[in-house]
Each structure stands twice: as C-alpha cells, then as structure tokens.
Image (cartoon, rainbow, N blue to C red; front, side):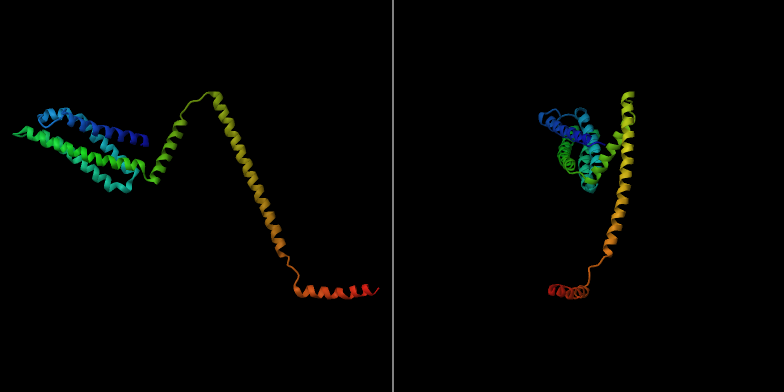
Length: 224
C-alpha cells in the first residue's frame, strides 16, 4: 500500500460524491423514476462509492489504528444508507414511486455521511501515525531493494560495481585497522596517565625542612 494510492482513492471518492450530488440536482436521478430505472442510473456510481469506501477504510485503519472506533463508525454510517438504498429499490411494493422517494432520501443521507467519512480520510492522510508511516517507508525501501536485485545491467557497468564493492571492502578493512591502532594508542595513553597519577606533590613540612637546611649555607656564603 502506497500513500500515493491512498491519496488517489480519496480524490476518486470525493469526485463520486460530487457526481452523485450533481446527478440528483440536475434530475438525472430523481424520485419520480421507477425503482428499476433509478437503480440503473445510479448502480455504477453507488457500487464504486462503496468499493472506494472499503479500500479507504482499510488504509485508514493501517495508517491510524488508534482512530479505529471513529473510522468504523463513519464507515458504518455511510454503508448503511447505501445498502438500504439498494434494498428499497428491489422491494416489491404497491407504490413503486414511494420506494423511489425513500431510496433517494437514503442516497442523500449516504452522500452526507460520505462527506463526513471523507473528512476523516483527509485528516488521516495529513496526520498518519508516525510509527506506522516509518514501517511503510521501510517496506517500500525493501521492495525497491528486491526490485533492484532483479535488474540486468551491462557487463561493463557490473564490472564497475564489482570494483566499487571491492574498494568499499578494502576501505572497511582499513577502518578496522585504524580503529585497532587507535585502541592500542588509547591503552598506552591510559598507562601513561596512570603512571603520572602515582606522583604526589611534596608535603608542606618537608618543604619547610628543605628550606631550613639551605639557610646556613646561604649565611656562610654571605659572610665570605
């Protein structure tokens, strides 16, 4: 499932809603048509609308699983009048036109519910679950990798790729050697640092004694 396909389904669903609304407004489908004629004029659009709604629902549940209750609620609210629309038109009645009027009201209701369903679909397209989106991106990348592995390329290009791969392997070995050398250098530096830490500055008392021991010698020097 690609995000682009989801966007296309949203556009098609919106166009169908507008088409059905326009057909009702223009009189292409209206309440004075007998049920069979009303169904004949609306069957394709109603069936397509239902199919698109089902595909949208499946994608919405994938992209935003935490919104599942809302998605299911809006889908059922759309699906029910669509189902009832067809059932009313196929019911036997002493007043077929009454069935047509009722069916048309159900179709109007379906369009209204479809508009609400469309709003939820657009909202989810704008703000899908980040974790789910990341998984889908990885899936697309993996799919591209599998596709690339099946591509046949010219021998000269393949030879260049082989050389490049060999150079990359050599580079990785050099990096490994460098990392090992840096590790050894770090050990030597740690050893030197440890030796330096063993030295201590002279105590204050020892410094005073050393100073006193030097004073007679300085005095004798001054007398000469």
